[in-house]
Image (cartoon, rainbow, N blue to C red; front, side, top):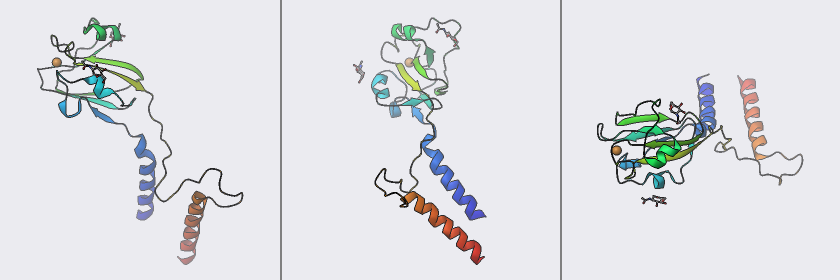
Length: 169
Ligand SMILES: *[C@@H]1O[C@H](CO)[C@@H](O)[C@H](O)[C@H]1NC(C)=O
Ligand SMILES: *[C@@H]1O[C@H](CO)[C@@H](O)[C@H](O)[C@H]1NC(C)=O
Ligand SMILES: [Cu+2]
């Protein structure tokens, strides 16, 4: 029973793992500060609903404010109903909805000096069927009709082994 539970865990982990959310450390080792090009940092990265952004900086030296597109262009925060900026220096933002997201630092001149990040968030990644090691995907088209594909033969092997164990038990 313990072995069976273990095997199920391994298979579930193999199927679920690729869909786990990603944590992005904004600016990587540089963190959130003046003098980093966050457009370049975001380039080539894919952001999905459920991923998190981590803004790391010395508390009191910077902050993180979510703004709208026009305010981002102006390096301003004119939305009086928006929540106050994050200030902990260890700010985690979970991306909860798809679309464009804009973040700036509201300290004087920091945004104009580059403390601004715009990203595009896409829908959550569905669990993609990734091949489990040893369970080769059937080659498309080149197995003759009636011939067992490698996947089917693996299933057969397991079934035969299970039947054998039941008989021998
Ligand atoms: C930041 O990087 C982007 C993309 O690599 C580039 O187009 C832009 O000119 C850079 N900005 C600055 C201020 O260097
Ligand atoms: C202002 O902030 C509120 C709360 O976050 C938001 O719902 C609203 O859409 C924002 N308005 C603009 C114009 O960005
Ligand atoms: Cu700043």
